Image (cartoon, rainbow, N blue to C red; front, side, top):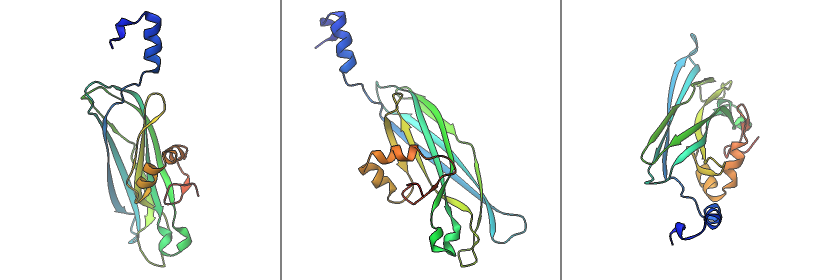
Length: 186
């Protein structure tokens, strides 16, 4: 039925309960990593991690307006090579920004670079540090509902897909937080 067949008050009620079209987004996070020696050390490395978020609205008629994007860069403790109890991660960076992409449009955002340091020896002499482990990003609609949650970390994507509440737990993590492999707080 056409909406204009109803009086103005009824039209407003119908609009308020009618399902809203959701934008069909194609999202991708590209990560770059560059390592270099720390001074004259043969084992200590500095690592610079860069990330670029790209969102394409593939919808024909649904806008994605004022969405919130949160990007997490996660490091893994290299001391795990010398101490099995040191196998955990850290949120090296949590960056949030707003995104808008109208139908057919593209949005791109370059995150601030993250610099970390770690011992590159994979043996019992490892003194630790944070090496890039993976990323996670969560895209929220303007109303705060989660549109997309993706990660590059092993089976974590399956956990997120099976339990939508897991993405909300990840959103609550702060930069610098220590985490397990499933991004649960340590």
